[in-house]
Image (tube, rainbow, N blue to C red; front, side, top):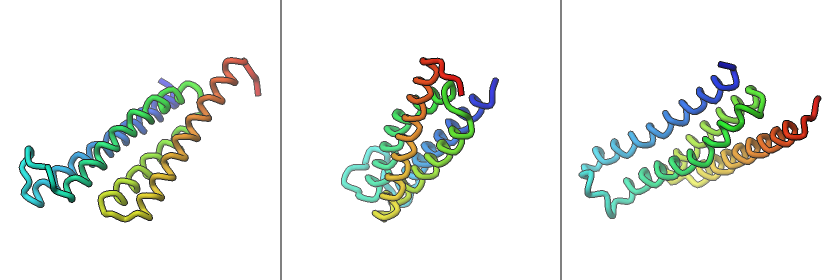
Length: 136
């Protein structure tokens, strides 16, 4: 297996760990405020953690396919740099969201979206270069 695939596997594992960490934060919040699993309605603190976790899952669905496609078309160093940046900026976003810190949340949100768009364009550029069989 090539370093391209190991890089994507590594980033995927980090994304999975981040998603699990956001799930654990829901469990901790339930315990902290003594909220039974069925009784999550009308609790603002738990709702923020739950919404952050749900948003993480939604972003995984957007980012993971383009990450895996990039393993075929983009240099592994770009994948590693962009993948690590995405994971870090998602963590920043989640932290800002659950702590109600709009500056941190906005920094993370702007950053991870920029990374996502950059990887998206790199994949399409790589696809075009590959399709046209352009040699550099």
